[in-house]
Length: 523
Image (cartoon, rainbow, N blue to C red):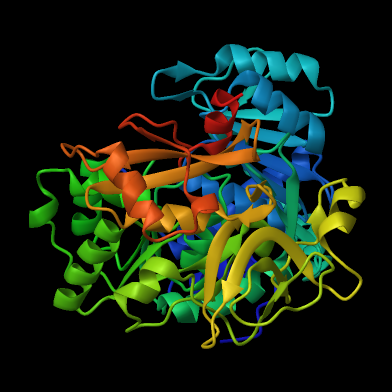
């Protein structure tokens, strides 16, 4: 393969090499790489005419659909930084992100499921004068234009201007802006360059087995690193097919995986759990799957048992790992053939191309087996937080290390074991308590599907743990027996002082239990 150093160059590479290979499969649409290249250039010239300059921002309000890739690649080709907005966001959430990064152009769907964005888009057009164009996929409203007619307008006079602009782009230029979930405050914009995206994918493609022609399923929101790097763009990087779904539906996902003969099937554990309950799950054809992958949180034993069982039958790999938005995806991976114990309790080993160490509060490395903060270094790291040099300086040092805020230990074999967020650790009676350690013990109890432990105020010990437990459907959990189970396996100061069993715990879009909501409920 030639030396490709910019994201959009992969579109051109595969269009030249195999123009009729399928690039996108979406609700009956089949789009090849020749189409993707041509559409990318049409959108890029439309952005130039709309006034997009090098270094500007371009946003897309949508779920996974062809415009995800065409606008992303076109924005990068004209030197703009692309970002995605979830149609699940309410108007104030959209306002915050748009006011923060000030895009020149916003492309948006007119509707999603039962929601019409007409009034919201008109309000945004009135409020933000820096928005030179709002282009609507569907019927336009006041202050906007229809996306397709605007983009499809021939602009041969801009061919040379596009070529000149594309020639100005460098690997270290900003390409992607992803806003963090904001679970501990307002969202922060994470800036990635062409170089950081491609550095991560060079490793991930090997680890995930994403060879030429791979078929990956994209049903994540387009503001998520799983869409923007790990699956959505990764398919283009590998010259494969991005199978797109506009929403996650357990039954429809199983049907799509089988019909489209998906190779790489990555989800968060909660998605797999919901699919296990679909009546057709046991009849799903998995023969084409080469990798089952989960991320976002530790997987319950049921997920590991079911996926490894299927993988053994079809010859697929089962993988998990550790990464964040700031790292542009995974930096550690389990290995093919790792035991169920490894898959349950570790997040793999750092990729050999990258660096990872566990450090104390002084940011000094600590011995194997001790819990500390995960620090990483490598070309995959973000450039920084958008317009927040103060926050960037808090987490990145002069030697290029990024301090994640995630706690873990590293065993003698180099596998990391996540202990939770640094902000989740609490002190009970002078002792450090790491919630993930306790959650592992609770989840080992028969009938427990997922658990979350959060700190609650206590007049004697200052803080104590409260455990929230989700049982398997149809199972009952005896809280007293569960407490005994914990006391037999944990020091007394770690044993939660309250156990609440419920099948309706608050959940985040990532498939994790919403610990912030639980903490708030504790006062």
